[in-house]
Each structure stands twice: as structure tokens, then as C-alpha cells.
Amino acid sequence: MTWSAVAAVVMLFVIAPLVPGIAAKTKARLAGRRGAPVLQLYWDLSRLWRKGAVYSRTTTWVFRVAPVALVATAGAATCLVPLDGARAILSFSGDFVAFAYLLALGRFLLVLAALDTGSSFEGMGASREVTVAAFAEPALFLAFVAVVVASGETSLSGALGAALAGAWPTAAPALAMVAVSLFLVLLAEGSRVPVDDPATHLELTMIHEVMVLDHSGQDLALVLYGSALKLSLFAALLVGVVAPRAALPPLVALPALVAGIVVAAVAIGIVESVTARLRLGRVPQFLTAASALAALGVILLLAGSGT
Image (cartoon, rainbow, N blue to C red; front, side, top):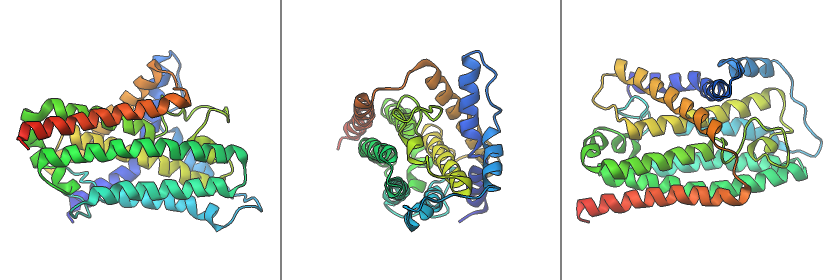
């Protein structure tokens, strides 16, 4: 553990609510609107944190634990990613599996909380959420496999480090496919257009938002923050693949990470401005394309290495 790794994690925790704000502002500007302030989510979180939560008599302890677990699992997964470009706070062989399933645990508990309310709408959202997850996780694992093959390392700290930077000159097409695949997974995991629409208010079309209709006050603040942290984490993971920073000093690597996350947030806003939300039946095809890109990247890397 180094001071730069700790500083990078703290920095991501702080700037996480900024990412949805930048995406929303980009979308508004491209549509010719002023839009909400970039810091709007910070103000929303502050306002919600000062309010009390209301609980239905049909809910159990699962409903109260889920928002905390969502933030805790996303925070634990953040500690496995080398945000400073060199080494994560926690690193071990195969830690990318722990990364994926920590996030899956948070999603699982949030789905249980939605079912715990007894609401048919929230149950519908929970069903859709696990459907999206079932198609997003293979794409994520294939992207990790490609990065592991390209770098020859089996931990995220090694796979996103100097070895990956050295692999880009000879494996650029394959790694570019992996980067596109990760961006598609980011849109799905972050509940963004074209998979989901965080700005919609129509219950029949929502996925993530409909699951948290019964959350309020501090619980809703935790859900919103956990979702923003997860989106920021995937953006940081994408930056780590596209621009490995192991050779940079920490005082340069950390601002480079922030700049990369901002670029990813702007890209999300652009995508949401030029595309429409997919019909639910098209979402599996969208994520299958992400898996196919990552798988093709793996094949190219194996062919290039002569394996």
C-alpha cells in the first residue's frame, strides 16, 4: 500500500458524484439546454442526508442493509483497482474475480431490497436488472481475460500496469476492442442510455430507478452515491486500460486519472445525446456485442502470442 494508492481511492470517492453531473451537463449542452449544474448531485446528496427515511411495514432488515452494502461493496472493489497507475491498496492473483463479484454482491442485495417491498413495479425492475447483469458480466470477464493475456499478469495491479503499456504498440487493435467493450459494459453497469435512462420517470421503462422507488432520505442518498461511485469506478477501469500510467509519477498519474474520467463522462453524455434507449429485447444483443468484441480481442492476443 502506498500513499498515492490511498490518495487515488479517496479522490475517486470525492469526485464520484461529479461524473453523472458532467454527463448530464454534456447531454444538456448538446441539446441546446442549460441543464442542471455539474455539482447538482452533491447538493442532492446533502439535502437527502438531512432527511429521515420512511419504511414500509412490509420491508425487513434487507431493505435497510442494501443501500449500505451497495456503497460498501463498490468501495471495496475500488480498493482492488490501481487508480494511481501503479498498485492498488489490495492486490492478489485473480483479484479481478473479486472485483466483479463484489459489485455483483451489491447488486444482489439491492435486487433483494426491491423484492422486499412487495411492489410489482420494483419486482419488475429487479427482474430486468438481473437480466442485464447476466449479459454484462461475461463481457466484463472477457475484457479482464484479454488484459491478463496482453500483460501476462493475473492481478489488476499488474495487468493495468507497465506490462499493459508495453503491450499497446503491438496489440493496439485487440486492446482497442477491449476498451470499446468496457465502455459498453460501463453504460450497462452505470444504468445509462442506451441500456437504461436515469432521467426517465416512467415506471414501465425504468430498470435501476424503479428498484429504488421506496428508498428515501439517507437510504436514497447512499443508493445515489453508490451508483455514482460504481459509474466512476468503471470509468477509472476504462482509463486504466486505455492509458496505463505506471511510468508516470503519482503527482502526474492522479490528475491524468481525473482527466480520463472527465473524458469518459463527456463520452457518456455524447452517447446519450445521439442514441435512444433500446427496447428491452435489444439489450441482450447490445451486451452480446460487447462480449463478442472482448472475445475477439482475446483471440487476436492469443494469435499474436502464438498460443
